Image 1 (cartoon, rainbow, N blue to C red):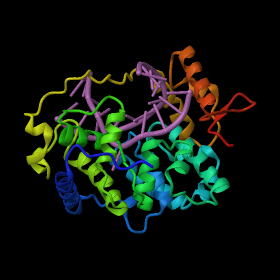
Image 2: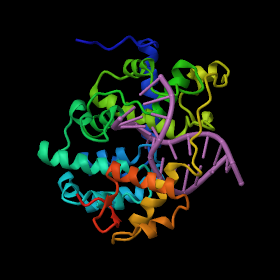
Image 3: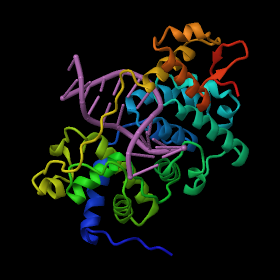
Image 4: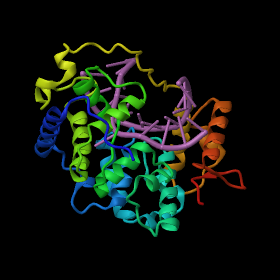
Length: 303
DNA sequence: AACTCGTGGCA
DNA sequence: TTGCCAAGAGT
């Protein structure tokens, strides 16, 4: 049905772009364990979920623990979801741990304990969105998909579009561009995706891009345009102090700390504002991150 | 479409 | 010091 959209660059320019980025990746790729030859699709999936909005340095130790403790989806599915939340430690956004556990259950019950290799089935799993489905299909199975994360969007914005920053959220135009830039051959496309991401993570960074180290310096649309400043609306900063997110984090930290259920009094010690504390605790229960017991105590979810 | 959801390092 | 932000997803 659909064919590859015409690239805005032309065939020769596109080949040059691919060649430069792939050659750069061969020389500069980080030696990350989820890229090692002995990695499994499950390990790749776990890494992609952990890396959502979370720096590599913080993910590394937790990923090593997870894949050693739960080498397959069925291993994780056999545990209580609360164990996933506890082992998530302080990676942040703990609902990811809950969804990863739910994904493991779905893999065990509906996929024979295996990670599927196609985008649609991956997308149907809890916690797996458009980006992560494409990343797993591409990185773990070598399938041809446009892997479009914030790094990729930033590299495309600068090198091809000539803008200082990508749009606030993924746009249809950005998605089309990523598809148009995708190499024809699946194995090359898979390397291209991880290579562009790596370039965005190490060189074409958000704050202080290391343009002197960039293989695209002499053909970067943004540099050639004189590095114009970002013209769109400024990104909204995330409030933190005093927010529900902070309170939820404190409450869950108390529950993660010990193996035993916790009393309401122990939870009260972590935040003085009782109404807010109660609202946040209710929210955690509603999210399935906390389980209320009949005796009034609380624990991480057992089922 | 806009908003929510953790955490900690760094300039 | 404080704001920025790091491989998004779900609603």
